[in-house]
Image (cartoon, rainbow, N blue to C red; front, side):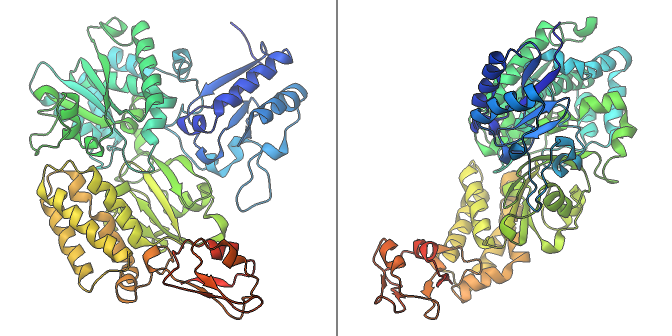
Length: 597
């Protein structure tokens, strides 16, 4: 076996792949060959490291030096200077947004230092295509322990005592779900993994499947043993081709090692997993719609009860959890329920993975203990708001969630605290919004998404969300009327109370949440025909400050519709009737004489 003095980890999650990490990796390999170090230095293609806005990313071990935003030329320089001569390259190091100091080691970055990784324990650390690397980090030891030392009931008891709750959104106790499926009568049962991650800005499940697929495979096998199932399905969306590829390879490797299939570890337990690729319908994230899709039917929800634990895939008892939930199972089995339950809060145990995006300096995946405050996530880990802007709100829980304001920055991020504020955990999407964001338009954006993704089966969701979207669109276009706010609230409550599934029941949440905390913005749109954030084009007006205007004519030259007039060296004017509100004049004015109001 070859022994390497240096390992170079190249982030090859989907985000870094889109940033051309493959070219960086190829440049590293070529340069290492040229300088004769291919036998001493190993380049490893790993999963998502988490710093998605900094890709392509490379981490060099054993030093732990973190290089970011690399090009193929940078990669060649890393080989010549760092690996060959031992010289760290300062210009490629990470620089925090609010500091002039360069951070050399990944372990010293606040982004990593403040996290507690359980579900993400292997992502960005191992090569997900090599099963031996997973096994070297205690992979499949939990399955061996469950099959060799524990009864089915003992496995379920450990999961229950750990306090793990479903990470897909609802937060239902995972151990109870396992117990219900175990207790349901029937010789045939199924285990399903929901990887149909559809929230805008959410990519936690995708990154785990891409970076640590065996963690899900092993956990599903343990679940199969616990509930008495011999067949599992991973339902993953077609928009995740890299996840499908790496999961398929992991399943093949597990079968070749005898970790899936007949008589696993020489026991009488047999279990296998198949992949089902979804067509991208957001509603298929709802468990009964997902089950229908697995069966080859149209992905539409059905009334519950019966719940899937009693009647699921092909009418048989089915255990259904999402990727992140399964990713916690193996550490719980190996380390014990007490270890897991001491992390987090009294009612929200363990850690939670968040995908932080939007107006924030450090975009990416973070895993923190439940109860970590929003302030810590946004400012300590996320690096705060870019360009010196003020924090305005954070949308949690995706299109089904709600917003938290600056007054809520010290809110613990756990199930109960978010629910009390009219929001929700959801799958873990966290979109940060700065002072220039129009909250009315944010509500319109999310409602437009859920209206589009409604399966149309029930009238409250199909028609109600359409009516709400029409009202919100009118308001953002300057045509809002008195009574629109009350109409939105009435429609929202009706849709919540009468929709068939969770998509419709939660679709009005962003509207109700923004109405509660930013009602004045709705009123300004309707009564003053003004967007306080200066975002809604239909309510914008550009004016030239006569005291600041030098009459240089630059704005006139760049206006695409000739809406600006005036004599040279005299203040100019904008014809509001002709102006298309493109903002080019404001962008080009060298004297900041043009204001958007």
